[in-house]
Length: 373
Ligand code: SF4
Image 1: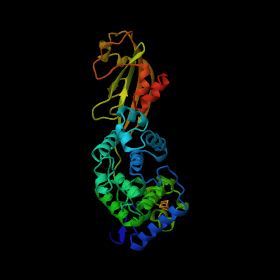
Image 2: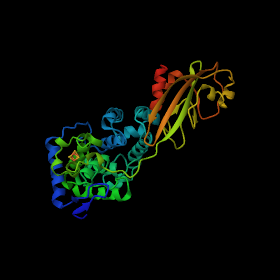
Image 3: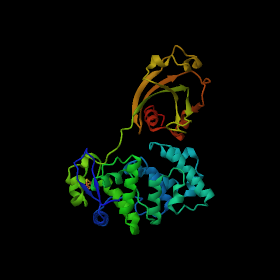
Image 4: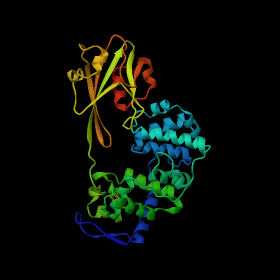
């Protein structure tokens, strides 16, 4: 990397100092802050057991630390070892995961636990390359496990790191492009304190999470890097880092029909490559736009139920934002005299068994309201 880079026309043009002295200053100041002023406390910090570090990192993918904390405690208590996790029933693990979202993480975690427990006889891989081959693990998670558990010289690069580096060095290359990813990964590698990779990685992630925070909320007056920070000096904190394009957010409309016959309800399991895979749900009608009770009555389901004169009762709605979509869920209930055959993968379940099944968070709120939990 050359010693100087220049910001593009959209920013004030000036030289960004990439000299070895400035890079050394960055690392030294960061490490000094970590050992003297970093007060962020989380139960997996200082942990050396690769299994527990792996569990924490999988939970923290797409989840904030404070939200992930109770899940980390629940999982490590229920499954204190990789063998214990490998032996669990999928359904029990999904139930513990309930509310955390992105269930593929849990599915991959179980597959990896079984691979390590069985094929690898319980021995967690101990090189970056081998860790990277595990299901559900990308370069960031592999670098975190390699450095935290084994002290290997691997630099983590995540959203916090992009933010700190782009601001401090004044880099306006979009971090979500191939070129941007390469540029930030190379810089992160150069800055890493190779003799103390675990502490360095923890330091930069903590600084990004507690001081150099997103938008205009950064706590620059208390930042150890302020003296030489380009974004701070040029009043560009809120402009960095740069993302290439906004992701299009699609809306989906789910209509859940809770069909009850005596003390039984119709429940199905979500399959196929879609959100909430393997979780349970009542009968679902997905549509291009929101439907009301009279629209729903035209659905072929009502012929199967043999109750053309009954109208589903509207119970309320919930909106949930996922990364690339917004799910608008509308809830309806319907009572029929006795269970009938319904086309689909579901079955009639006693109300008392609902507590044992895993549901998406949106549905838990609804079922709780109906006092089924
Ligand atoms: S001075 Fe502000 S913008 Fe610069 S690294 Fe520190 S917190 Fe981030």
